[in-house]
Amino acid sequence: METLEFRKLKQPIALVVDDEPLILMDTADMFADEGYAIVEASTADEAWAFLDKHSSLQLLFTDVQTPGSLDGFELARKVAERWPHICVIIASGAARPGPGDIPPNATFIAKPFTAELIHDVLKEKGSQHS
Image (tube, rainbow, N blue to C red; front, side):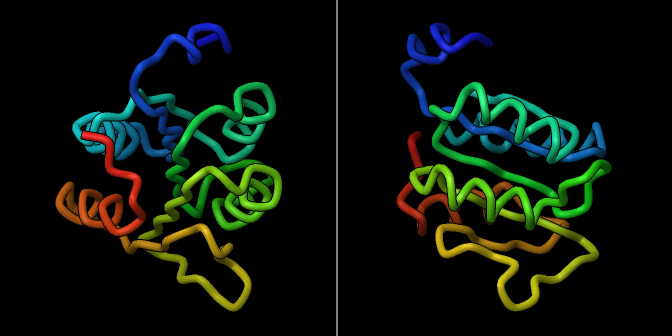
C-alpha cells in the first residue's frame, strides 16, 4: 500500500508482525474484526522498513521472536522512541519481558491469546475503533 492509499483509508491501520503464517493470519483477522485495516509483516526487520516509509498507522502488534536482526522488543522500543503515537502490543509464547524490554506505550500479552483478550487490551488502551 502506498502512502496516498493510507491517507484515503477511513479506518485505523494496524501493522501485524509474526513469522508463523497461520498465527499471522489469525492475528490479522482479530484486528480486522476490531475495525483495523491490516498490513502484515513476517519479521521485525520488514516491519521497521515498512514503518520507515509509512508511519501513519495507529497500532503495531509484534511477536517477540522473529528471524532477522531485530526482535519484537527491539522493534517496540525503536517505534516508541521514533513514533510515540503508535500503540504497541507485544506477544510471545516463549519469551517474557525483562527490565527495559517494554516501552511505556506498549503492552505485553502471552501466547496463546484470544480475540476477547485483543478486544480487552484495545479497549484498555483506548484504541478500539469498531
